[in-house]
Length: 293
Ligand code: NAD
Image 1 (cartoon, protein in one colour):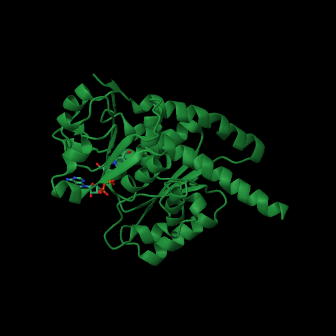
Image 2 (cartoon, rainbow, N blue to C red):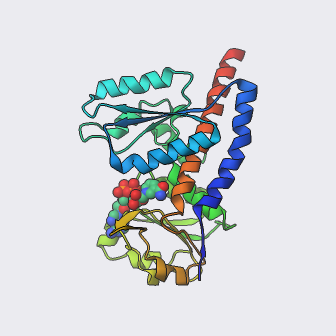
Image 3 (cartoon, rainbow, N blue to C red):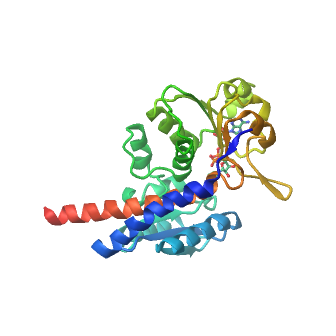
């Protein structure tokens, strides 16, 4: 029977390590890290994530502000809003809540972020740095999956890793992170599923990470004996939240598995806070570097 990988414990460790760093930033540099979330229109789907951001920020002594902009805002005005946050020394991190209304192109808007304020690691410069294994700010959920795997003490070198899902925010950066750790990495996506080859790949996985958004897409019987399973998917099934992996079956075969909910989600928010602290440090470093010149 698999051991459950509860995100809360891992998240607490990350946040405890941030507390001292936040105190140092305050005491030595008079810097209280500040996070700005930008939401365009009201979106009930984001409310859980927003509440978690606010709560985690409050607990860590981080300044948090949510800006809710008019749903009809045009692209230029939204970009100007972002440029103002870039220019504001009191703002260390910016988050753009997704999805945006259909008239706005999220990738284009994010490309206007100052990369050292991009705490969700979605700016092209930050995504590109993952290839070089030099990312300071990387997508939070992908980092969360790596933290969870690290918590098992696994040695990634040469392990068969299978990532199901190839989104720009989760699957693709995660696959690069696994490659950087020398895992033999396979990425499956919709076309893999359509060709009926998903089971074949999943059965090889010593590390299985699934980020699709389809309840019980991965049958528990496909899971390799002794695998580590990180289920990122969140799906509503009746009044329950479930992942992408059929939990009961997978738990019988895996060595470790994340529950849904209570697995990846809390770690993602802790990584967001870690990225904010990192961003604040990068900005101080840049500012002090300029002063010395
Ligand atoms: P997305 O919709 O951008 O991408 C889905 C991916 O799944 C695509 O790569 C697609 O090709 C693949 N896919 C679709 N059908 C498939 C099939 N039948 N077989 C194989 N692959 C298939 O989604 P996303 O933003 O990456 O999110 C994925 C899931 O993770 C969602 O449920 C989302 O809610 C969840 N999520 C959780 C967290 C967290 O912190 N826990 C964070 C982000 C996303």
